[in-house]
Length: 387
Ligand SMILES: *Cc1c(COP(=O)(O)O)cnc(C)c1O
Image (cartoon, rainbow, N blue to C red; front, top):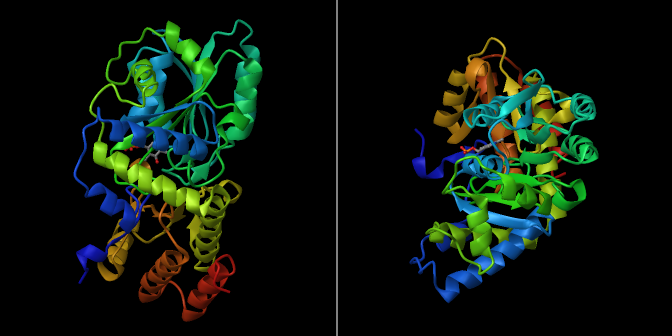
């Protein structure tokens, strides 16, 4: 029987929350117009810039990751603007829907679910746009629905050659998991959310905004109010917020950013890479198939094909027997894949445990022998800090 309090979240958000962060959440709220709160915003803003590796403004919004992306889109664009959207999974689809909802003219660049977007397709469309009609390129860096990481660095370089178009990027499961150097890569708008790599419960989202994007914001005339980034910029000048922010989540943010700084960016990226390699190599040893192209695996999530096994039943078994919550497949992938989240507050022990749990469930169904269990753990441990 499962022990509810010990449930391990190995889904791509919400992710586990460290004790220190939980304690910060439980403090009594303070006034959001107080000097204390302003001091807090000053520090968290500084540390957010550190995390984003940027000098750009980084704005905190009360809302989930989708709010951050929507804010970026509607604060910089106008009705009828032509935009290019990269679409190779559920989140890519969502940005197309939002863009269309606001009356933008959308050109999609697609790839099969499980494959990465081809940067050459972006290069071609942008080069052919001699009149500079394309106002933005919208895409997802780490496509959580399939476990694919897109080549954002190369795509961004093509956008910069075009010179007019803004990049509006969903980095929700890449920021805080792998290198996203916002300034080096010249990213204009980068969106992320608290319940992912930040190790905080859901409720906050973040948007970094370049000078070029602020210029575009001056001309933007899509309808907006709560998510108008210009209002946030104005308030940020005095370390404030236009509306009542989720004060306690900002306490949590302060704590989690301090933890991240203590660990250091390089170590955080190395840990996620290690876990990605450990999980993917174990999965292969267990004779299961990775859903995503192996050279383009996301650092934060691994999608696994289950073949004739019902992936939903399999997830249920893992949850009931081991108190580990795994994610299912979305849309047409439901029942066909399951996804292991290894994002945020995850350590090597969590990885060993989830591999053992998956092995045990396969063993019970006579899909593998004990030899493969040993091989999977051996394959994983080569990548972990335990050998
Ligand atoms: C979680 C996630 C989001 C944000 O979803 P919300 O439910 O709005 O927080 C956006 N993009 C990706 C790739 C995600 O994984």
